[in-house]
Length: 233
Image (cartoon, rainbow, N blue to C red; front, side, top):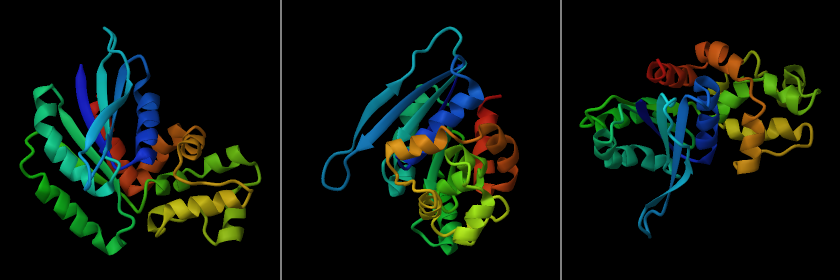
């Protein structure tokens, strides 16, 4: 059985990654474990297990999703946990965090900083920056909008908000979560980073389109999916 750990910055990434892995690997082959970390500057950081799938004789892949609940803690949590993970048979670590609220000009600095911080981690690892937020991936998967409301077409979005998620590069949007909220408001829906709202989005995503087509067009999504594919082969 192969083991991988994915460190994410928050609930949106946690819910999306869990759903993506289930769609790619299949529930019979995959065992998911989710740990949420609470605490910070004023209190100890405590991790609690919120999901623990059983491991059976058919399980081929075990993935730990470690929710740091803080974008700045993803790299430091990897540093703190990697030795324990390696001892327990984990083969690979991925970090996933947004660029926002940092400006896009900070991306090279953020990438170099992550690599420098993790230079002593001996197991394979990489931090993926979702540019500018993981919601950019949701924007680019434009098929899901008409599942929520048949009138919410790319043409309607272009007319109402001045950009077309079917054609334009969503990684160039400065605040994709705000864009997503504005799109939904066109038909009287809301988007906040709540569990219910995120689940509504990810349950309507076209994962085949996202996995096969968007991974070629959306740079940060492609990097993430290639790492997941390497683990699942």
